[in-house]
Length: 318
Image (cartoon, rainbow, N blue to C red; front, top):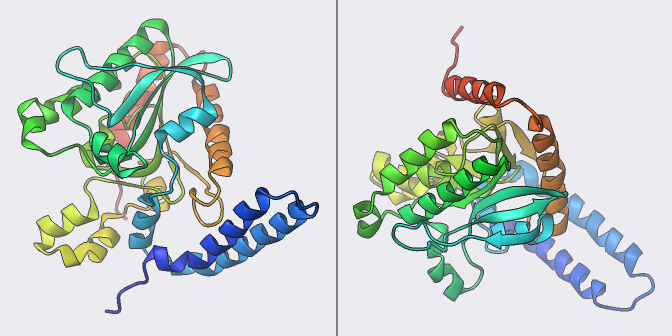
């Protein structure tokens, strides 16, 4: 079978057009608005040509793109006066998870998300977005604080998975994630999840389920990474493409199964080509989701959440 083209090769023409847009934006050219609009139109045409070629592996590459917006980028654009909280009050602070309180359209919310880091140093410091148990316990601490005051919880999911190191296992990685799931299921405040990049394994699930799950068009959400699946089932890393296809990790597939509730469109080329438009798209759908649960009685909220959880994985054969 012929190997599919990598997304980084497919997008070269789009990146060249984006570079022209960025260069024009810095000039005093009187016609730059019209020229930028023309270049954006070219990006749309090029993207329309590329989309039919996209494989599931390409979707994984888009979700992992190094220029894709991360949690702190969304916080800077969508929220005001973010006050970050540190530490789980048991062991340490985990920079792989950012958590705190902020204002969103005039009301206080709790914001929690994975953070990968943009530079090499930051990636190492944040462990490439792979959280330790103290990260999930910090997230839970903020969720319980939000519950106490009736603040909605917003989570941003973007991780290859929970950190599988010996220290993490010794400190109770599986227990921390499981306890989060148990607590989230009965948390007496709305929880909205947004998959902004990778939604990998229990690492994503540890802060990634609640009352409504939104998913960016070219993100993915999976029980395991394609590499991990290939290593376990095929004993071969070269089976990465086959694993990715078989896992059913695309947003449209997950929407069909009822695992996610809504797909948020991305601009042509992906979120990294036009982050500002991506933020606006997320803002629109996030606001709609929060409005849906505003003022809902706690008993009704928990009953609907329970029914949503019970429906996951149920299907009918005819």
